Image 1 (spheres, helix red, strand yellow):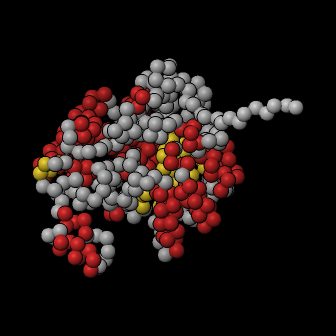
Image 2 (tube, helix red, strand yellow; image 1 turned 90 degrees about the vertical axis):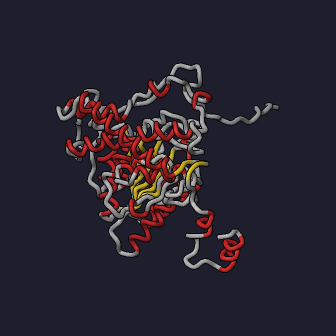
Image 3 (cartoon, helix red, strand yellow; image 1 turned 135 degrees about the horizontal axis):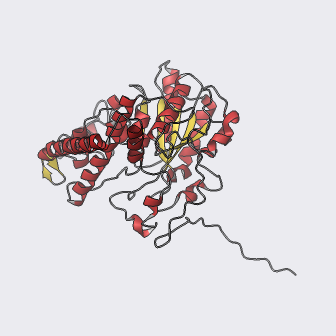
Amino acid sequence: MNKELPLSLNVPEPSCRPGDEPDFSDFVIPKAGEVERPPIDVEAKEIREMAFSIIRILNAQGEAVGPWAGTLSSDELKEGLRHMMLLRTFDARMLIAQRQGKTSFYIQHLGEEAVSCAYRKALQDGDMNFPTYRQAGLLIAGGYPMTSMMNQIYSNFKDPLHGRQLPIMYSSKEHGFFSISGNLGTQFIQAVGWAMASAISGDTRIATGWIGDGSTAESDFRAALVFASTYDAPVVLNIVNNQWAISTFQGIARGGVATFAARGHGFDIPALRVDGNDYLAVHAVAQWAIKRARSGFGPTLVEYVTYRAGGHSSSDDPSAYRAKEESAAWPLGDPIERLKAHLIASDVWSEEQHAETQAEVLKSVIAAQKEAEAIGTLGAGEMPSPRDMFEGVYEEMPPHLVRQRQQAGY
């Protein structure tokens, strides 16, 4: 009689842990310009292989090559570089402010600046984003006042949300930035629902959903793909694969599929992967997917391959779960340095201009910070009125809330 072996489970492990040497040898990087650009009305089955490649435009020499190149002028690229520099400088100042006790919490975008900054430039005013907490570049590239962002982080008297949201969970209907939800995954189904409503009403605006690699394990992710596919919703569904969730590497959420983009195949949704650290490639793919949605050809699933260079948040210590040198070893490089190198190679930028711009950016961020801190920070200065907690929930306040507000003295 044969004795059966005990059951076992597979627990995926990253290629390196703290103390190990970073190893990206299994990460296949296609040559820049190698991936074809299909027509926007292409059927999902015709581009299945694009879910396993990576669309890239910038090569090692900083040149823009291939069929996806040419969507932006030199002036637009210089503006994009400044947006990324603004976001990185803003991040650095706000993280320091958190360490100084001026706010309770902060989340950086370090290494991911190209994803949201480039994407915003492909949208039209009126389009709606349903973001997570690492897409502040949508606001910065969309012209949202930085002081307002800081007021929200500090929860002071001029916080646009009146202290009702966690720091960095911005909201601005006018700038196409839906209120951030801390329950990740909800953004995808909200985006699909908004896009369906836009189509039902005969509007021309499209929606964009954002999710991280870890949150693709949520059931909301699949529910969104079902509705988007069934109704051909005018929506772009973005997965920001920055390799790490809060403390687990991307293989935990990815499961048995080779890429996150490949999950679109089961729903007959066109799926692409793009180099998330290539500003030009991000914009070109965003423009393609947005035009597809607005032209009535339905949803697109896009995976942005990037790397979270900093901690998950100000509460996180990434050295506890990944090698310290892993960020520097990331083979797709730094988005700011890559765009800078491209502009210099194109003879429209220089090291001197870059240094001058960095100084100007720092000056503008410090000025905005001084303005916000003069109003108040966490525990200091003028705070929102407690009355605000009763407002903005119902169009007409019900009697029980009126009584509670009066009992509270407001």
